[in-house]
Image 1 (cartoon, helix red, strand yellow):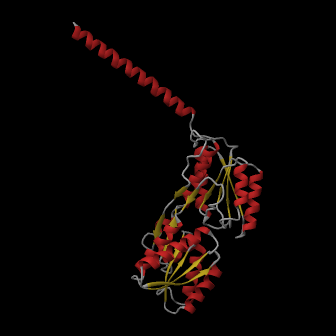
Image 2 (cartoon, helix red, strand yellow):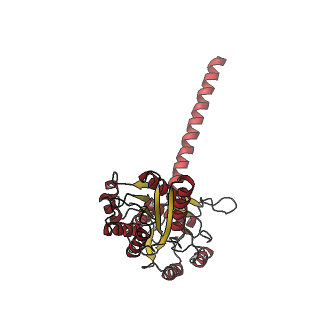
Image 3 (tube, one colour):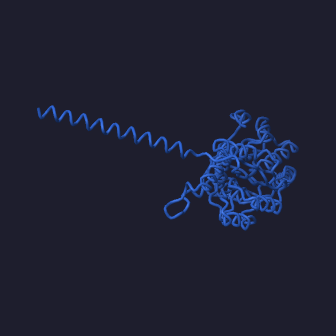
Length: 332
């Protein structure tokens, strides 16, 4: 009898536990649905860049828009039409005056936008940096490429192409932080790991095809034994390619560029550019908006009110060559 009673009690206990867990699960599901990450269409987030008309920003903006669709919020795109830091400051100030829900900024200068960025944060507007950082500003996070490591990756690829020997040059933006870091990564890797290779010169291409072309022609003229050129951004890479074609060096000069605009991809397919570094630009835009949304809705604060977002997010790099270039034409 006692054994039977024990069995009944055990069955009743299991039933009670089951009912409790079922009700708790239903409550959790209801709470999850009630707290679904959804904003409102009148909640506007803004992306601010420079040279707003270039192809490079299209994928970052697409990621920004994709995240906005998922979160049911609105986005705008603003910035400087030219490579002009004062124009970008003005554009950012105009955005701040409208007090949006959050701002994602890419800056051509690591310091010039700091007062405006800090002003926005102090006014309660979340700001994150993407693609090009302003590390001394009050922005909450930087989302983008580990540019030093990307430069090192380009150096390893150049060494592979040149059998670890020969003279190479660099075309870059010497005053823009992300390009400084790429240049430093490339240069340091060459010096430390490839003793038979030499970086003979670093020239300013200013993000312009024709200026980069002229700078490349100077390199070719000044260093007749030059075997390779690393360009830290897409316009520079195309400019280097134009110089190689003009000097009939497309078969003897190895060019490594950055990014995946159509001009760069075309030159890879034609064999003019040997390789390019593909950044996760869509991911930069997507996670920028996700970060801003979480900041705006106070979803990432600890018990002391401090943000728990990671201050740096590396969106990765991939090498594009003639073997896989067709895969990148289809990426929208």
